Length: 179
Image (tube, rainbow, N blue to C red; front, top):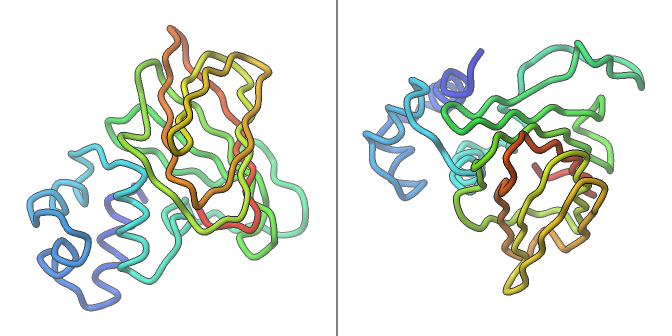
């Protein structure tokens, strides 16, 4: 199920109309309609607002492959593909109920978080495996290259952009899970 279909499913489960969701999120009905049809590019902040309004976490938008035990095979990773944004997030940890959440992201050149966002984790670490990216945490700006990492409080507004000429690969580590 694609991102838009997941959003529509959760909205309908809660008996909300497109207009209800749009009003509560602070956007237009047209935007929600396009999002549900995977025809627009939502920011991470928008996805987080939608999840909150729907009484879910962002992780509710990952695919629903069942996980058992401690091992997550590469071919079985749950993922979110942000339509039109050239970003794919893979859930590395097997469960969303633990105290740690690890994501692996592949971010195409020029892609960004489309503005600052925050979430309810205490601490977050971004480890850049490949590429070059710029990060903003509050009023501070950082440029990271392959092998560099950045640690910060997740509740501080932050944003990022792939400023390199190749896809960036990032490991995000959050505790407790909130994505």
